[in-house]
Image (cartoon, rainbow, N blue to C red; front, side, top):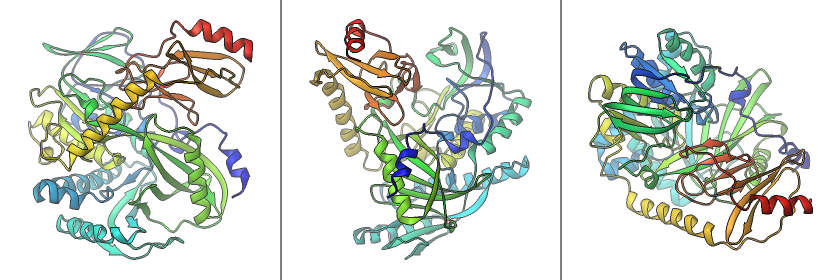
Length: 521
């Protein structure tokens, strides 16, 4: 492996989707407003929900904590596919044919809906029909592939069994879905935002919602103290910031994954590919003004857990070099996704006792079709009172895919990190170089320290402001990450990802550490 590739990884991560499109510039909410529906979260699910609802002449506001479409929507592999690893045989066996059919129909219809929207508004978004492939290199998983082909076919998906793919990879079996696609998510959504704002939808950026009150209607409060009163609220914030009663923090968890975009001597053969084993490896091509790019993704792990996060990029580079002659590493970025305990998103009424708060979360890394499907379900529930696919996505569902074991495992993991962070013995090595971050300990309490390239020192309390877990340093993204529920903070303490609504603050040890570190540097 050429060491020059590793040197390239010292550059800051940047998503191709963001680099190749213009930034948005919508105002911060500066006054109290009243609307019919407030959509909290301006990712793909939130924007598509607003698009569908505005066709029913509903007064809508979309409120985002930062810039719209800057989260997972701009850090995806952007595969428009109903192939979500090996899901259909599991749903059919555990939840029954009818619910499996609902999930298949929702995602297959989502593919068609996205294409219809593109055609209707003549959107140039690099849309390309593709086949989607999931494959195994392990003999013991061949039967799983065979069962998935059978289940998907029975549910109306055009699926077939394959024995090879066009790469130097020896596979044992695979499943191919026809009539799938890929696109540029921001090139798709930016024109759609123009459509909805022209129709009267109000968009507010840099307006983080920090409080939700259920009174006469719903009242939302921004961190700047402004108020939004709405008849109904849609929470589409990836990880829900509102946890009253339903305890979503115990039913979902956050995972990070990584992507590199390379140019190669070889021409990409077409198709979208993913293996079913760990570590995950995902492949797709992408035409750009810089020539053809090849996107290689994978290396998923729970947010905030692990040590050297930069190794994940290096592992993807090694994998890419085993398949292609790399000419350049154009881009690299990481993504964060919410995972549910039974592998199916939670979309619908926030809980069984309310009809005025709705939610869409837990897309399991399959957010393109699930965002479209979620938008349709939410629109149907708000306008019609019911939706054909609501039962399989129901956040209050009881019949889940082996969820008990996953629920126990994930919540034990949360408890472990809640406790271990408080009592860990951390060496008092306080020499911190430029570009380096460390956790420091004094009298049993932790402080996070980071020194920027100019030598400036930033010190924060490493206790997550969500539910009190101890944060870990992410050297690849230069952030403080929560191993319990996925909140992420910059080295200055500002929020990158929720569910936290409060930034990190300095604590009583800061003056001690600042004095010691400055003397040692």
